[in-house]
Image 1 (spheres, rainbow, N blue to C red):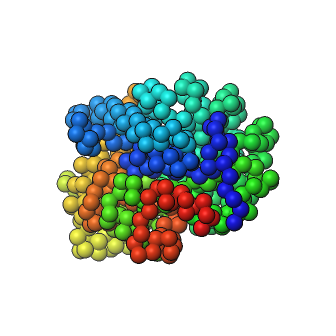
Image 2: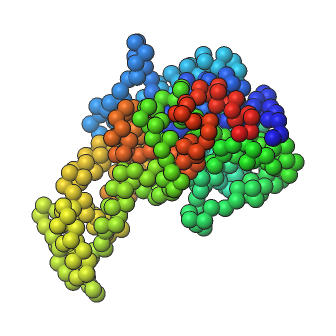
Image 3: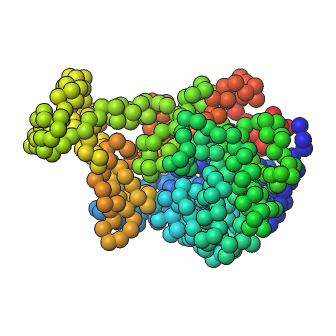
Length: 469
């Protein structure tokens, strides 16, 4: 195995090992601080980050606003307060070693306001901003305002080229690196384009090479590319290291830091990671963002699958084959189904899926009464955690604060479920909430490093990674 040497990133020499940012409340100041103390770049999430009371206990982020806009303002205030708290912890633990990055999602609600407030309240404690989930054109403007480096997350050379030409060329000196996130293997939200097949993963090497060639045309030949998604043992990436064709390369680890002593996830979650099999993590498109995402195939995902499978098209008038009357809702307003679809509906009703819910695509899905109540309650309780949400039809943009479409019951409240799963100690709750993960999570159970249920510290994990295997 080739030696892993430090590279120049963010104005200093650091190990080419980056902690991947994981919100909500999963990548904390503690994990980031320890990763940076080990010589790499630690990443704290500024997405719904936790903050603490005078007794150092996590404060429950409860919403009291009567309207979505009022709750959205609470969410932004919580986000700023939590981000500052995590930055302070990361700084204290790192002791000035490595780098501390803050991760945000461009499509999260109030993204610019949150990261601006965090950087203002934690001046000098954060060295870089990483950002994906969208096209963050204004990331370089924020970096310039606070004189920190920025690290856009892209999944193609084309995406970076668009960002560079529109905005980033004005702040080239602060571009600390470019994160290439494999859209088939990375955890969380993925950047698959409409022209890419989610069932046919592509080799990352030619895609990263294309990104490097694009960077060179902009005079960025020495800007590090951070490979994210699918990285486990560095010996599998040895041909990338010190490769003049690719230029400076760093590696990002998002899934592996979950299974460390400093990781805030529950012991039940850590044990679940040990049991995952290949294929247990898969791409789906249930997210209210509209993006593909990678998550563990648990009861939560299976219930979402069931909603979409119990779905039929309807018409408000009798037309074509849609001639069978069906009453929807308490008032039994008549819509028209095909006779064959009505037969399916009667079968679902016999199984207890008696509540029909309209989607924006002129279809009906069928769920139990209890599930329908939960969906409606989550939609009504929306706090605007995304810039636009297809589940609740929220939009943070004036004047209407709506995306102009009907709320979509085929999706879910992502803020609630991620808050629940990140703060639960109940094994059953892991089955009934969203569990983001990279596709390599099944390797925990096969890697001898984790034999006999061994859970390393962050320092031990980084040392292990540096051996190549």
